[in-house]
Amino acid sequence: MSFVSYFETWAKTYKNSRLHQTTESKYKVAIRLVQSTFGDKKLKDIKTADYQSMLDIYAKNHVKDSTRLLNSYFKKLVKYAINDKIITRDFTFGALIAGLESKDANLKFLESHEAE
Image (cartoon, rainbow, N blue to C red; front, side, top):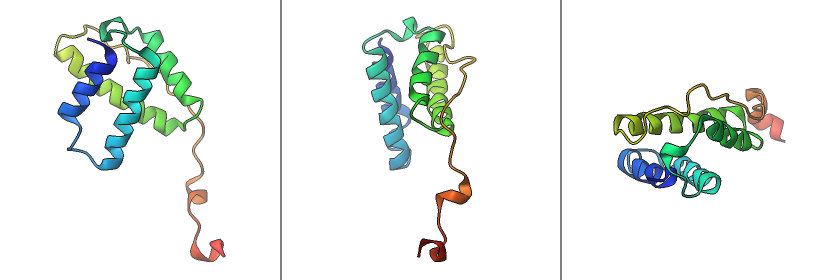
């Protein structure tokens, strides 16, 4: 089974319709990332270095918190795949999280008097 098809099936079964629409859209972004990175590569053929490379590419244009969140989605998916005996090892283990620095929380929002 390919990584992307397992991810799509897993998300439909365990995530879609149970999450806020914003979170569901983040899963769709993750699925597209897997499709563009791995195509039809089988889940069992994903190596730790392949996975790390995907995270690093994603991190070049996203903040560290987004990369961390994306990694959490994949860690959950891998636990299910191991439990279902689709794979035998966790290729997300030891993943290094990188990304752009987040904006200072104080800079994200303006008070009404600051906006004038």
